[in-house]
Image (cartoon, rainbow, N blue to C red):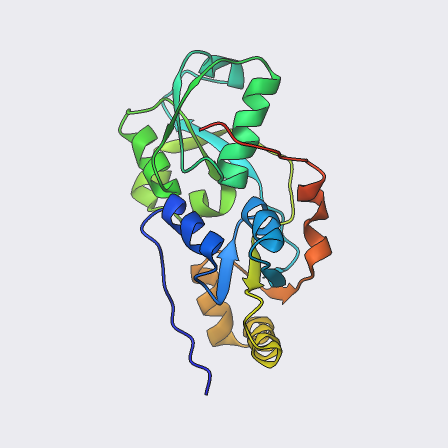
Length: 217
């Protein structure tokens, strides 16, 4: 019998270290992480959220006077980690494209970004639509969206090369079937997901075409 054990990481950087070593047989990773991990150690996508695109956002407090990205000039902004694709890479790239100077601060998680902005530690920070919608309402209700990125292929459910093919197929089938019955839909809804679908490596070519070579820390 093949037993699955759920394991989290205390921060995004620690998660990056672990999947880079191939610690996980199966992993749920952002689009940039997947493109890197598909090269080494060779993770292969087998599922993703159906009919979904990932979008990065900048958020500010509801009472903030900042109304556009130019209002972030000279500010210290919060991001979850250097390699958080939609919550960090895309927002930072857009600011640089616009010539907006800023200081960055990494706070390890999306939740820490949102709470940091609410408490006034930062005027704004990067996240994604899904995690923003899932954050505690006491936090979310004090924030508003300032900016949103175009949509890209979302996170990948990916298998390490050592994972047996028959187990990957069975897991993929079980995950896809979750959207077909009430209990499964309830569990997916908790994660901000509606239905999962089969995926293949080429689905993330839109990320590869961005040609992200390196990240500043």
